[in-house]
Image (cartoon, rainbow, N blue to C red; front, top):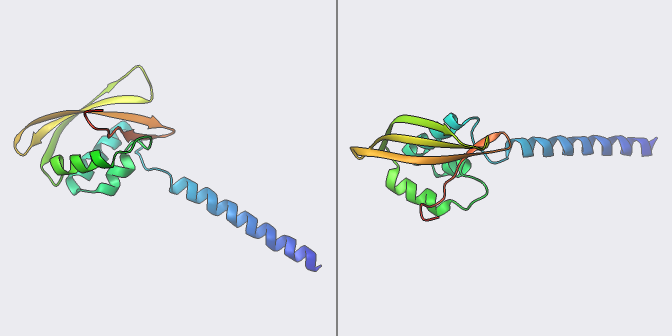
Amino acid sequence: MRRQRWVLVGGIFAACAVIVTVLFLRFAAPGGAASPEAAVADYVTALHDRDRGKLADLADPGTDSSAEISRRLTELGGGRLVVSDRRFDTTASDAEVRATISGRLDGSPYSDVIWLRRIDDAWFVALRSRAA
């Protein structure tokens, strides 16, 4: 009888461990966004709010984007960029979209191309330096 109790307790513990692991992997995975439009909207909001963490969540997880995030926050962050138009162009790949954002930066006309990549079911911004 005592052995059966330990087997039951061990089984419950193992089941709980599996559930916790699945939940952790589901909710701790890199952020991204549900669509290209949502990725660009989140990107612009993160710049406006100077939200380094959100930009890191949106960044393509396959690249080290920390320097580029710093550069963009310095050049575009804190309300300096006001986006008035977003255009999305498909590419030959279903996993890549080209987004052109335009508006004003410190009162002057501004336009930039942002590349978006789908990884699994989430969309990420390719935050690599312009020199790359």
